[in-house]
Amino acid sequence: SVGGTGTPREFLTWGNERLKQFRSELKRLGRRNRVRIRQLYRQ
Image (cartoon, rainbow, N blue to C red; front, side, top):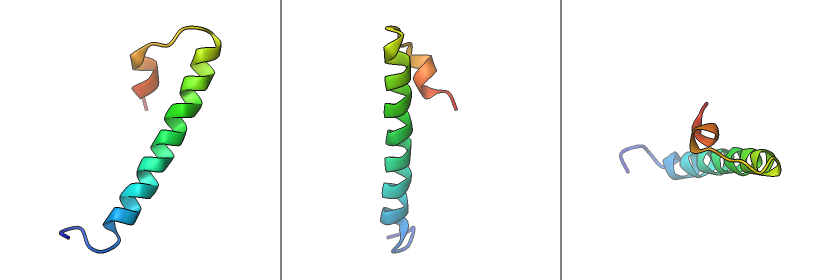
C-alpha cells in the first residue's frame, strides 16, 4: 500500500467519525422536519 500499513485503519476511523457526525446532524435537523443538503455537508 502506498500509504503504509496503518492507512486502512486511519481511514476507517476517520470515516466512522464523519458518519457519526452526519447521523447526529441528520437527527438534529430532522426533528424540525426540514433538511437541506447544504446543511449536512458544511464544515
